[in-house]
Structures are given as C-alpha cells and as structure tokens.
Length: 458
Image: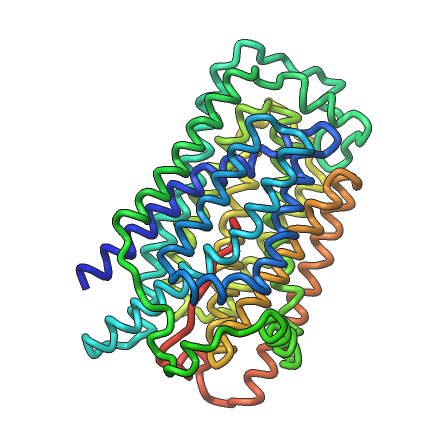
C-alpha cells in the first residue's frame, strides 16, 4: 500500500505543478490576449485538437510507452503552450495550442489507467473491494489536483497586483460590462490597464518552471506500471488500428444511454468555458481589472476542490439524482442572476459569490458525470470515456468558438437551454436504468470500476 500510495502522490503533485501553470494561463487567455479574440481562439483550438487526440492517441501511446512515459511526454506538450505565450501571436499560440490539445487526452487517459490498475492490483492482493480502493486513490488525486487552480491564480494575481499602471475604470466603460456588453468596445474595456511585459514574462517564467518540475517529478519518482495486466498475451501484442479505435468510439453511440448523455457531457464544456472565457473577461476584468481574475478563480477552485471531496463521499447516501438536481438549480439561479446583474466595483463580494456557486455545481457535474459513465459502461469503459472526452471537448470548442462573436446575454441563454436539455435527457437515462434493473441499486452492480476522468481542465 505504501508504494502504491507513493505513486498516487507523485502523480497528484505532478498534475498539481502542471495545472498550476495551465490553469492560471487558461483563466487569463481571454483577458490577456483579447486582440481579435486570440486568447479564446487558442482555447478553442486546444479542445478541437483534444477531440482528435482522444480518438486515436491514448491507447497507442499507452501501449507503446507505458503510462509513466505517456504522462511525462504529454506534460511536455503543456510546457510548449506556456512557451508560446511568451510571444503571443497567431503564429505561435495556435500551433502550441494544437500541441497541447494532442497531449491532453493521452495525459488524462494514462493517469486514469495508472490509478485504476494500481487500485485493482492492491485490492486483489489485500482482499479488498477494488471500487473502494480506486475511489480512495481518485479522492486523494482530486483533492490535491483541484488546488492547482488556487496556486496558479494566486501567482497571477500577486504578480499583476504589482502593476503601476492600474487605471480607474470609468462609468462609461462599466456600462459595457456584464450580460449586455458592448461588443465593439470589449477590447477597450479589457485592455485599458493591461500589465506591462516584464510582469507578463515573470509570470510565464514561473509557469514554465512549474511545468518542467512536474515532468522531472514523474520521470524520477513514478514507478512504471503495465497498462495491460488484465489482458491476454494476444491482446498485448495487437495494437488496434486508427480505424478500429475510431469506430469503437462511434459504435458505442449505438447505446441509447450514451446518446442521451451527450447533452450533459457537452454542458460540462459549455459551463467551464463560460466561466473561464466570459465571466473572467466581461465581468471581472471589465469591472475590476485583470489582477482580480486570479482571486476570483481561486474562490472557484477552492469551493470546487472541497465540494468534489464532499460530494464524492455523500453521494452514497444521497444518490446521484439529488446531487444532479442541486447542480441544475444552482446553475440556473446563477445564469438568471448574471442576466440581471450589472457588475460594479462597489459590489466586490458579488464577484466572488458567482464563482463559489459555480464551483459547487461544477464539482457535481465532474464527479457525478464521471461516476455515471464508469457505472453505466463498465464493460466498454475505453469507448465510453473516449466519448466523454469527445463531447465535453465539443462543448469547450463551441463555447470558446462563439465567445467573441456573441453578446454575453445570448451565451447565457444558450447555456440555460443546454442545461435544460441535459436534465431532460439525463432523466431519460435514469428512467431506462430503473426500467432495466428494477429494485437493483445501480451503483452496486459492479465491484471494480474503470478509470474515471476529470476534465475541468484538459
């Protein structure tokens, strides 16, 4: 157990260092590179590349390199994105966004595979329930990992707070903040107090070093593990072709439940994309300044981290339906309030209330949707989680893609519509499950579960 726990901690702290950098950069993209929508365009490209990556690369890289070296190599793709931000342009940021996207799916798949195999392996030796051990490992991982948003955003806010050119935001510019933003004036309102280059380079230098340390931690301290312990020798020797893997994911769409879960999975991308791409830019940066983005996102990450741990534990008592209902009601209330609210610096506390409530909801969307996939599709987990990454990434691509084209209130109405559709189709999934296995608790059908993923963050 001690050796397994050491490996879980190494992976957890490696991801903490890596996403301290990437999480901070993602929160700042829409505000830092607002010219011609470069920032959100780069994020859209990241998730578009991630869609392709999730279809082909993970099984091939994990079989060829093993989980350890797949994780280490994929982390280098994230470092490339940090380097691309040093001289941000369409010719540097877009290519490095593609590289990051291609590395994202193998990174998360290798992590999930590693923790799942380690958990099942220890459970078999200790005579314990595999599901319980895997849940413990993922609980430890997400507790440590989710705090990356705190450190990455704290670093950015502390550095940008040193700016000497912080300007007072005029009432005229404040009128263009919020849901009914002035599309033609968004560049002016978000760039009026842009930090100087020296502060930006300092921040990017810290983020790059953090990524390098993550790679070194994995390379030096993580033990190699075979990703195919449960497979036969024939399966080990056979590497699936591009076509077979591509078709496997789409053949999984023959399952009605998978099709019905598409809106819920895409909504996860929509809601995360709105917070990091629109709320940070048109509410926080517009009304308070870019140096507040980090503090606001710290609030989101803190609540998200604590609630992920909390809901992971209480779901066995409350059931997932009640938690999904809580998330839907909370998000709906936030969306309606954001439509009505006109942000102003004098209402400082309100800027933190929204990300706190959003963090609570997101914790439910992430933990319960991942858990739902693991339970419903235990026999076809690879194809199921490929679909999860595919449709969540589509949500991100769409959310970031129209970010600079539509006013915020239209995006909020779209978000609300997708949420309502998600709850209707999720209800249909629960109905089908109840109908197929009356009187049998879904969560207890299987002892061991497949890898779960989190993808708040690529």
